[in-house]
Amino acid sequence: MFDFLIVGAGFAGSVLAERLARGSGKKVLLIDRRTHIAGNAYDHYDDAGVLIHKYGPHIFHTNSKEVFAYLSRFTEWRPYEHRVLASVDGQLVPMPINLDTINKLYGLTLNSMQLEDFFASIAEPKERILTSEDVVISKVGRQLYEKFFRNYTRKQWGLDPSDLDASVTSRVPIRMNRDDRYFTDTYQAMPLRGYTRMFENMLDHPNIKIMLNTDYRDVVGLIPYREMIYTGPVDEFFDFCYGKLPYRSLQFKFETINKSVYQPAPVVNYPNEHAYTRVTEFKYLTGQEHGKTSIVYEYPCSQGDPYYPVPRPENAELYKKYRTLAEQTPGVHFVGRLATYKYYNMDQVTAQALTVYDKLSGGKKFRFDDMPVRTYYQVLLPCPLSIADDEQPVTVSQTVSQDATTPAINKNLTPVHAQHNRALNGNGATRIANKA
Ligand code: FAD
Ligand code: UDP
Image: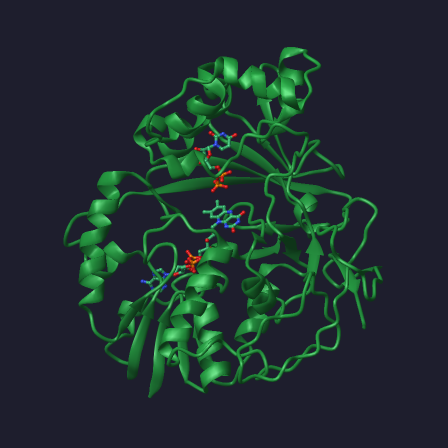
């Protein structure tokens, strides 16, 4: 008898499997209909030996110390700050829009204060910011909205920004300075040996059994369990009884190119040209050194794997009906991006799963002291881990990796022990050995 049947081995399902097994001694069966663990974060080496993300670029960033500390149990990190260029009017310019974007685009030499005045002169103030169009137009006016946001959004979502919640384009800030990072979170880093390896470490526990290539419906009557954690699409769980919740999908086209660098940035966005939205070159993300390089084009579409819940009022209403059903379904816990129909990033899903674990384990904070501390450890924490009152602190060496191309991700850090040894592991990936 399993204590928990967990449907889906992505962040939501795997974090809960790990916590329930290692934190509470529960017996867990983790099922995924795909042939691998890690959900949409799955990465693997392609035929050329380049580490790629099967479901599009996944960049880890969070402001949550707790989430970062938790995941640091299962991986070392490679500091990585994401940068994006947008192809607009025949030029490649920084995205999010910043001071350099505007100066380059219009051939100006504004400073930050002049840029504020410039935006103020072209912005169209809105009394209420309701849609994704309102967000952008109220800050930078219609022309920049049309150059950078309107067509990208129409491609990505199959909807005009005026039909999407404000939350969608609010993900991308407008900057008055020259900061060209895509994210400004406190912790920005990539799992050193990739996401799949991190998940393998997470799920490496005798109480966790994994069954891949299996839809849970095929086994649910055959395998005894006490409670279920479900991380698939919520409408599918209830046989679409209220109708289908819209999800946006993507087709990925991968290419390997016989040169070491393909494009001048990790991601180039194409708001106005082509059927694809963006091109990602994985080696920037992973730090891998290789004579060839692999890229992916993303073509948005309405049919296919459900990747993006579509944030708009009528979908939120429909989801509410499913949520009410979910709340009335005893013994099943709905967690994750698809099961709670939220446009969540990986860190938000991790935080949600840890919160669900806290509830399942009687309101106790998840424990750090029940796991062995790894012999080499690279944690980018500005202050010690916060731990529950009744726990013993774990000794974690705070280390910072410095590398010629990537600046330290947090300027406040004091490197206690910094050592950056580059070596190739068996797969050709870059490895930082950091023995404290
Ligand atoms: P998933 O990873 O989708 O896992 C759910 C799992 O459930 C799947 O593996 C599925 O096969 C399985 N499943 C579903 N139904 C069944 C069933 N009936 N039986 C068995 N198994 C089932 N987040 C970031 O933080 N940074 C990024 O840069 C980023 N980039 C992204 C890029 C793309 C193209 C996409 C689509 C998402 C991106 N995300 C990013 C979001 C990130 O992918 C999600 O937040 C995260 O993967 C959600 O984890 P999850 O466990 O909720 O869902
Ligand atoms: N967006 C845009 N132009 C861009 C980048 C983003 O219009 O060059 C809009 C688009 O609607 C997109 C949303 O902002 O879906 C959020 O962008 P983000 O990069 O966060 O999307 P994700 O990585 O989740 O696909």
